[in-house]
Length: 223
Length: 223
Image (cartoon, rainbow over all chains, first blue to last red; front, side, top):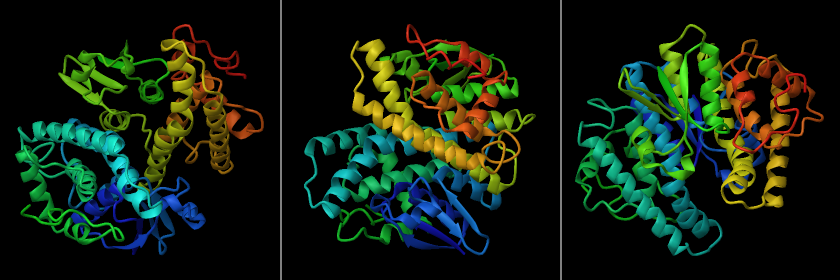
């Protein structure tokens, strides 16, 4: 059995969990707070980041969310999440990188720092300017996603791919932290409602990060 | 013919160029300074980052260095750079991500900011504390690479892979900017000398970033 080291609001771990859910691969969760720098975690992932995966029976560790997702795509190809021509696959990977680096840097990381780390671990209040910048950036990302969805039902075409899972994983963390204003983004709203209603998404929406609570619409499929 | 949008010290573009060189794929270089936010570049890569690739005959654009490398691995498989079992491929991708995110954040980005952007574009002097932190981090990365090379000739085994190209691309930029102290890293030194002597590496070592010059050992295969 695989063990997944993560914390509930890690967007990179959510991405892996959505993939595992879509492919029907069983795993156990292990709570890991990378900012606490637990020495034992370095043995599993020397980079000290979540997600990391451990399979004791096979004496195998995996880390980095992109490497993990590609590994399960190769070893469990039954339900492909990078399906299509080389060009389509390049577009899927471009969008995964977009959310992992650009969306995370501009939206996810500042929201996590200001609304999770500062509140839960330092008992500080968030910086209002940082939050405003993150929410403005989130709005621009919603516009970009909306323009992709003008052309097809999922981000890269007529089937769900890793691009949709990556986008939904990162958006879900921002939404939990109150960073998404859904007004005026009907296309993205409908796509995200479809994502939320998938069985792979349900366990994520039911989890809470300690005493930090999401807004009421967060877990609601009909939000 | 492919056009590669890049600047000489972009480590992500260097990674792609090493792959193109190893696979023998022809391309033209287009100089692009992403920090100038040229509007026309957004049409090629909406993320505004280098590298990006354009093939006008095929009406095809690619961006994000990971997506580009995987694309050419799939479409030009003759000289594989992600060769091996799924586990080996996961290790190759883990190391690529290590250099793209961890090495770049701790070493490459601060060196580029302090020694290239500040000097060439703002005529400011670099921050000595930032440089010291970057060089200390570089030294820790050299230790990590050395420990991998204790076990085999290349980073993941007996053949050169994308992990070696990623590591060499990022190290070469740090070395150009005087950020690498080679003393005490004999194993890494020998591996990097072997990398430098490859025909794919030669064109990169001969280029200069405007009036910014590398240390004398930078281009020397017998450094």
